Structure formats: C-alpha cells, structure tokens
Image (cartoon, rainbow, N blue to C red):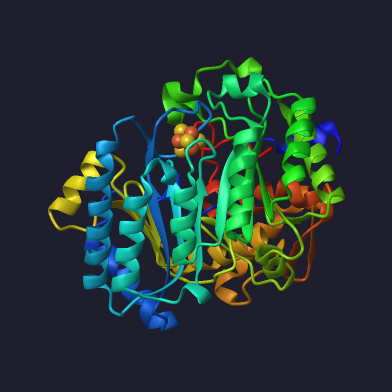
Length: 454
Ligand code: SF4
C-alpha cells in the first residue's frame, strides 16, 4: 500500500455501527412515546416478534486508559444487586409496552465488565429473562464478554448451563510495555487458563479481541501477540483499530502522549502484518476488523451473504429490532435509535420512576433508511446496489461523484448501480461509506467527532 494513499484517506470518520452516526442524531430529547412509535412501525413493517437483546453491565474494577466504552470504575461490589434489579425492571417495562410477546433470538452481555458481576447475579438476570420470555437456547445466540483477569469457572459453567456457547476475551496486546501504557495488565498464562477452561466446558465459539495502533506498540509486539493468540486458535479474532478520541474520553485516554501512538504507515503496517499472519493460519477476513475460521458461524454467514451488523458488532442473526438494556445502552428499531441515560444514577432513577430510560435518539427519514441499507451492505458484504427509485436519482448521482477519487485509486469499482469494494479497498471501507453519508457531504468538520479511519 502506497504511503500517499494511506495519508490521503487517513481522515476522521465514523465506524458506522449506525447510520446516521450518533453525533448526527437529531432528537436530543427523544420521548418514550416517539421511541415506541418507531417500535410499533417496526412490528407493522416486519411482522416479527424476534428481538436481539444487548445488556450493558458497566462496572470495571480498574480503568484501562485506551478504553472508549461507557463504564464506571469501582471496587464496590455492592453496586451489583441494585443494577441487576434495575435491568430486570427495565425489561419488564419493555414487555408491558411492546405490541407483541417478544422472542429472544440473540442475547449479548457486554460492558464494562460483565464478569465484574458475581455469577449469582448473572444467573439471577438470565434466569429472570428466560422465565418470563420466549427463548429457545438452541435457536438463539447467547454470548458474553469475559475479562481474563476475573472470569471464574463458576461464571463459565453457569452461563454455559443457560446455553451460552460464545464468549469474547479482551486481549489487546501481550507486550508488558504496551500493557503498562494502557493500564491493562494481564498475562498470557491467565488468558490461556480461561480459554482452555471454556473449551473444556464446551464453548464452541471463542473470540479474542486484539487492538492495533496502541501507545508504544511496535511491530514485534503485534507479531508476538498474534503468535500467542494463534497458539490458542480461537474461532474468531477481532483486530480493532485503536480509536484515539481524547476529547470524548477526557483524562482516561490522556495517560500517554500523542507521540507514543503509531501513525499512518506505521499503524497500517501493524494491521497488514497481523492480517497476513492470520490469513496464513487459515483465518478469513469478515467484514471490517474481524477474522474467523471457516467453520465458525460468522464465516459461514459472510460466505452466504447473511452477515448482519448492529451495535453489538457483526452477527449471524438478522433481527430488525435490538433492545439495549442498562445505562447508556442503545436500542435500534430499524426506523429509529434510542439511547438510555448515560449515568448509572440517572439510569437507576428513571427505572425507579417506572420510565423506559431513553434520553436521546434519532428517527430515520425514508432517504436515511436507503442510505442505512447501502452502508450496512458495504460493511457486511463489501458491495451494495444503489436504490432504483427515481426519487433517489440525484442522491445516487452525488454518491457516484463522491466515489470518483476512490474509484481512481482502485479502492472501489462501480458497474451500473452496483458498488463493490476491491480487495485493496477493504481497509478503506469506512472511507467508502463516507461517500454515501449525506451528513458528511455537507462538509461538517469531523475533527473532534470521530477517530481516524486508518
Ligand atoms: S477495556 Fe473493558 S475492562 Fe477496561 S475499562 Fe474498558 S470496559 Fe472496563
């Protein structure tokens, strides 16, 4: 990859876990009524009672300074019970307002650190969901994020008993220097212990999450981390680009200097070197940031063009309705987005008052729904077709104009109305999506809104 191409496209840009992206949401004070009207619209349109559930468990004992998640750092485990009570209450509130009896097709426990919670609290949460809602564990994807430092055998066994078969382990990088810089100290021995135990218990899809572009990260660190990861042969590997957004995360990310971060070609090399090693070991690149072995459901879904993506990441379940429970969680009815209160106290207070705790969101226009589908297609399948309706002709013409540079640089090709990402264009898929993004076309300043695309 030429240095000038990398520099040209290394600009601030969204990761497109949603379209419109959060900084461009228009309903700053979204009401529960507005939000639920989009939920009703979803049911009228899709006539499906299947839902994906994301539960945000925000507590962590120690702050990792690279982290971009909504979390609360505490060593006080007295917070567990009231929080789980509130999540259970929130689910009951949803159930009383939904126009149908929900059937859970997908459940993901994320955070924060889900394994901060005692197994008994997680059992209480999942048991309550399963007792009050239709769920068939055999036809449902159940997964959780496991911190290698505090995941116990009891966590693994109790969630396995409910039907959980998938977990992701946050690794980042094994170098002690990098670990110190990001304040996340964990040994390969500890990761191996949790990974091996999970395998022994019967977990069939284990993912390891790596990050490139971290402070003080050298090429040799990346190679060593990948080698140690491959030795355990997880089914999936995420290779995330470190998102440096100190204006959002404040001092948490300012524990190191900008000069400690690998830049441009150096950063891209970390990615390409890791990618080559993963592909040589039999992993295929799936969508953006993800690799999987051929037998894994994600790889199968990618090959069959059934891959879907929502706020939880890539998924094999294509439900059109995601409910996010917990502080800061985002829900998605396809026709609208809603985010819960972003502080633990605010969230608990709203639940106490018997309110669905959404505070902001966005209701999509018809045009935005078309763009949303285009961007989702690009992110999941690396190709999309422009909408044939003449009402979108002017928009499509503009998209083709905005793609010209990317076409000239051979990162994308357009045949009639089909847009395909080329092999060398894959790392630039965020830039390609930006050509479809009508909010960005208006030339808003993107610095202080998004991380760099490369
Ligand atoms: S990376 Fe995970 S464990 Fe670390 S602070 Fe963020 S959410 Fe907590």
